[in-house]
Length: 202
Image (cartoon, rainbow, N blue to C red):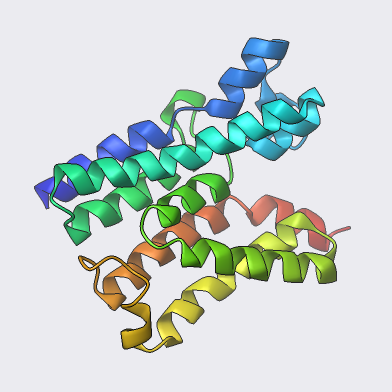
């Protein structure tokens, strides 16, 4: 339990670095929380500044927060499942609810993708397939993001254990990876509630 807590707080700190806020504030002297969608993430950074490179930089750094958190958790605690799971969860929670911005952060997709890339990249690819498929149907980035997120855990759950074991690290059990992945999805979904409400009221 001690390793889990240490890993969680390290990853929360890394995830809570408000990339979009710092970059937009530093380049445009604008508080990203008060403009555009108010989301502290790459898409809003791009839309607020109109500069593609800012959106790309923010997205890459946010993704790396998830990657680095997991790699540190794995390295510090000998690839143990619990600390790595804590790193996955903590990095996304920190990004979505950073203490530095009064818990007003981003929606966690890039950081969550980074955490999955560092453990089982196939799930990032599958999420993108779901996302782009439903985006063509809904014509809405938030609706397609939510649908793709909701579909991911059941896909993990119903996949035969021997198949899932082939695409996840050896220190994870299928049930453990399902729990870790689901925790990421839950945090991301919590930050999509408002945009989905707006989508259904359009």
